[in-house]
Length: 534
Image (tube, rainbow, N blue to C red; front, side, top):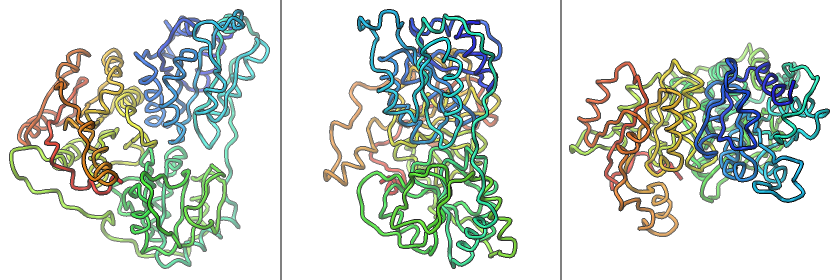
């Protein structure tokens, strides 16, 4: 069989259902073979800016490998920002990069570029299909690397002339190495660490989702009455936000983190790559600290970890629970999440916090993809979503959420996916709506239209003494109804609480088609939790 066929059959043998990509000439050998396949489908995006987040969102929603196909050097360059985001969030992603035909590389042809160097800056490993002899082994190596923790994007350079060559290799599933547990002695050490603390707390990150360890973490939190704080910018909600142990996301400010955790005398960090914050601030975390995860490069936020082990999180938490059979503290009887009341109904104008609360009440069973800017903290304040059903980009950039929601919808076609996106973010990769319509996904896109880069103005208020005119998005007036029409989506607009209520009442069972709901907001009215954003 041809190397291209071997590669596709190998992906199928490893459970891959979709390749997301914006193909060009060098991808024709792959795309042609995907044309009539049943197990593996090629999902066309209109740009790499949309294709990479689609694969990322698909991987997070399905808790499986995502695969994206990028077109030589310009396509890889276009996708690098989103590959950076996938790496920060720890998403297992296989990146098939279309290399240029090797027979005339010496002429520096169009689309040529230093692919290995480019990919290496945003991928944890880069492999190439160099000859028909090493191609099968390197394809398996790339898959194994992508499926080995700590997760992140792994690139495989695929020259089109090599894809057309013949190989005798047989496709098969790879067997990536998996991390072990702590062992009895190690588990006792972590159990003693928590038992000796008067007020322990847990700081959780994405690794819990990828290891399917949310239930074990909640059980451990209940055993030691330890609230679970989610690390800032964690890309996938690691535990149910309806759980009594859930204490909310930590703010992306080291000073505010220290204030939030000051009552605790011991901190167990589970997974993650450290505390990601936004603006510089000074603070101390003098508590005793321990860590369990997959990335050995993680440093303690202040001082050193008393205990630190590279281990399977699910296995480790189970072992700690077993070692702690004789220990039990009385857990809180109600949610320990910081409480902020929903603002009272006022004028006819739509308050952003009341809008978010109403959407959460109606769509509490949905998968939420959040790139809502200043309203993000409002979503986290009142959401009661199951673990794994709240996704953010995790890197701090924008332009990821809309396309990621399309990938999530293809991963979970029977479920409602809701993307709440700022108007500026929506415009970054709005072409993802074409793929949503073309593939008949079922996405409810809620656009928070305040005609401002409100998040940047909030930062400017702190760094420059006030809002900046350059962060205003109008004129011209943005026509989101026209955008919905362009891509064949349903459209609704709400400027008042009554209008939003009418829309929600008409969709008690979710939406049946891709729909854009534009919420026209007063830019002078801030979400009630806006102060937590920085």
